[in-house]
Image (cartoon, rainbow, N blue to C red):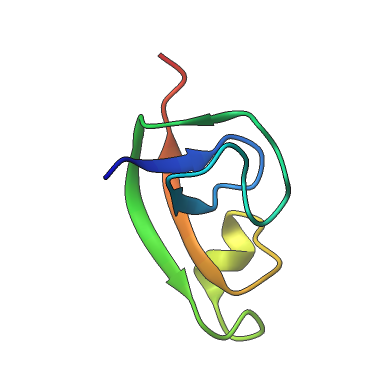
Length: 64
């Protein structure tokens, strides 16, 4: 099973043709680190990397 990260919103997802969160078709298999945001209001990390919704996100997206 391939795991992708959206290049626009950083959402991590599997087996699809577009991001389930933002609908972007720009995604990659080259990413590192996972952050699970459960409470967006209390998450300092979510604020630092500009996340606005709970979910599973990649910390680093690799372009190449």
